[in-house]
Image: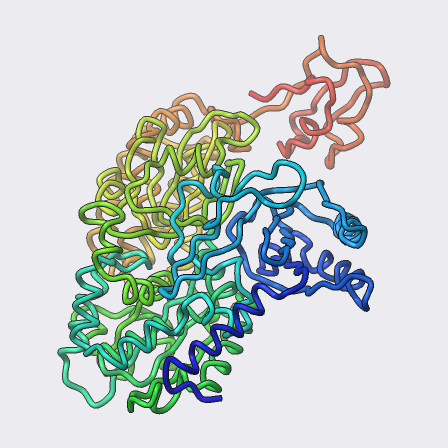
Length: 636
């Protein structure tokens, strides 16, 4: 069937609703990368075996990631016209027990995470997954999705469909309002009106730079050319970041629809999705989504019978971090070495093959359709004066609840870490949070009430970036953290410009001398001066932001640098050359566990006699500390 108008689109919407809410029991397994890595594939296999045949009249389906990665694998049971119950940390054994309970007509009580009351499907495509607040017709108290701290302060726009639809079924995306925005702009909105709406929304690029999306589109629209291009930057390479991957694996059509709208706005008929090859599941689902959209006429020639044509191709990147920079990404698509070039001209003036090109991130494209449907005023009502709407973060590190979260701009770091994140794991003390990936700054505890927005984080020496947020506790050494991120950017530098190629290398060398106990008093000022020089003279954003971890840790944790240099001590007891393991005689029982586990035979002692660490053999691996049951190993 080729979709030419609302009638066919609504027919597909009805079909999708029947798929999401069939008239019989439905079991759903979260099958994004986070779920699969936690064992969801094994849970799926167990459920498939149990549900096979007529033993249980149920539908078994897959979905993407709802964001609560800490609790994966997640399994949902949807009771027809009643309630959806989510189960956490599932195993094959528990999956089999769940099915047995369902066969017996009973309610499975183990591992209940929350209840989702029947969802409200709004035409606009923004769904509240807890619209009906009436109690479920099931026994027992089940915590509601709305009241879970992890979800309570989130507002889901880019992630609105993640974890609720089958990512490989276009009908389910349409059931949640999908492709209504594209139909609206093609049937009744001029390109200038679309750009004006995006500009008025205040949407800024979610890929890192934070430039006005509508303004970028306007520049490209105003450049005369017979050919123009639209690109989605899905080259996500930050340590601990998985925002783009989560969306592409869970709701690929939201990116496709946004790109088609962007193509119409600037006058482009061709788009590219540049995704790193390390995301095979995301690429697989993108290919299926493009094929489905083309099959229905939602991509391709003469979309909705309007004469507008738009096609998409996927380009797989080889994993070079620098290709996240837009001009390096363009070079890679063209088949050249992925290196940035000086700007101007900007891609909106001369981009892919010299033609006007707009490049936006996965998260940016995911906001476009909702803005078109709900309006610029609705979107601009969220966030702060200069940072509108919502943004997506990968919240990772030393927090109890790691996962993918979408928050309104302006929420505090404290709320992010202690409300949504559930606080610091193992009740340890919070030390710092790094925002913005490897090029972000490390923010200490005294700034926990800082709003998460472009200007506030920039004022502290950090960035919003593409959306990474790494939480650190008292056991993290800030000098070592700076070294880790500098090592990463050093390896990922393309080497084209001297400040980045040589400067970041020198920063790494100095940090290495400090963490190994060979630092000098002048090293701290040398690091700061060199960092400022690199920021001012590097060619692209990678080099310009690479020193942020160094500058922020010097600014807020200078005493740790001084301890490493003056006392040859690592306060966090992390840097191996600066720590010593010894046995506490009063606590040692002579059990021998530490001696048996030591990989270098650096511990000696007879059975039931006090043991001793031979410092010449000790490699400071910490195995003895982990093995000891009597807290008899001291670290200094």
